[in-house]
Image (cartoon, rainbow over all chains, first blue to last red; front, side):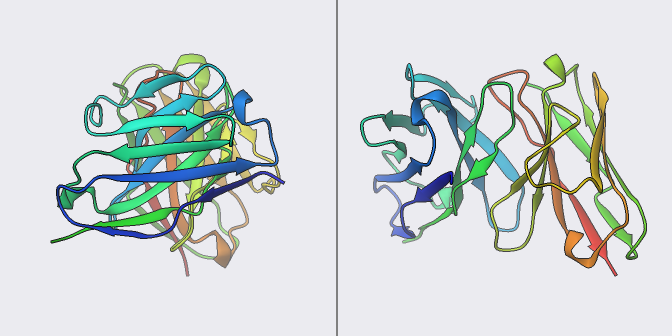
Length: 118
Length: 109
């Protein structure tokens, strides 16, 4: 069974750094893209970027580039989303999701609520 | 960047009826790489359709996708109360970014 398990809820202050994780199991981690999607409170889905752990190719949404860093450690089947300086406007649920080449996001993590508040 | 516009914003229908949801792209979606997702409150999205018309594993045949180029449709027949959700389309043919539509809320009353 394919599973994506994300790290726990985070409460941070503006200016702090944060890294959240997404561990894949039940499939070949290096053979699928892993994407990150933001959902702000009560809003729609925003595609942030995607990584192919097999060769570490990364594609960022220009709207998020420079604000986040996407990475993966294929030795432990885990993808990461990192901020160096959080803002209040980063408050949202963040999902990781697996994407086969040529397919849609077919398996999703449970989501991580990140709250940034002073 | 390809902008996806979904319509209508909200759709209210009765059980047993048919729902037709539209997703229009600002430019052609390469290889018809267009997906549809269902999201219920408090849950992660679920893939329904990709490649514009291929149902994902375990999705009932009441859900069907059609279209090509810039105009795509999700059709749900024989509506059930559990179909109440927000539905999003997404294109992944032009990357980055792989954009989402703003969503259509489907209410079954």
